[in-house]
Image (cartoon, rainbow, N blue to C red):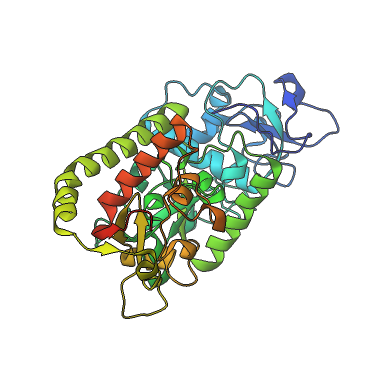
Length: 382
């Protein structure tokens, strides 16, 4: 994770030294997880509170251990046990959600939890004792998921909820509408059980974009993150928060997604070949147009690289009202490769494609052949 958060205000991107935390006459500050917080409203950290000796200090270790011992008031967290590390992450999330971020502590060496990915639309409650503001027990939505835990809830086990994480907030999308989009047959199933803020905002279903890596996002794109979190918050139940991944964890998870996809492609290759042999019908362009979803009793078809595919299982995506309905009943190799919805690209002309674009085309054609049943082929030059 980067230590610089470009979406924060100029005030919040200020770097503090340990000595800067003690400003006579200024706000009461503590440093938690590398972030400098204004805790002036806390009865726990201010004068007379059980944690008043932590004021003006880095205190991540003390919070992780739930300790008020002065010897633990520091940021020495390298020797914490796995359970203590989980508690540390919970405390960082809770404190960042409740207090104003003033800046970053320059001496912090750990992974820095990004405030933008904490779902700060809801205030969480720390369970630190003696704090009047945070005296309530953690609510249900304060549960902290790891990306590995999240992957279990991808819709492949009917006994488990179907979830995804947007903006660091974990949502249950197992409603009828959500399942239609994110379930195993849905057009956005790739997001199920995954942190997918980047993919939703771009939008992109590429494995490399199924992540919460927003470090190259513009201000406009970061604003979209808030909009999408608000959208999901209004539509789906919140189950908790996602612990941000380290770069190493993210790379490992994306590699696993890519390997799983490759295994599925290999597994279905034989079935695809069988479908090719069985599907001998030849469609003219005019015939193909009749299968564009206008007739509810007819399948939804489109042609990719000469293959006519039945995309009815993804009707929410390609059917009337769907974001790619313009593909229905058409030959769309060019548009599919360019991810375009422009009329001029709704054809099979790839004569001007670069080698890189042709490689993308082959990759997308292979994916669609593995996902949808082939029912015929398009008439040459149709």
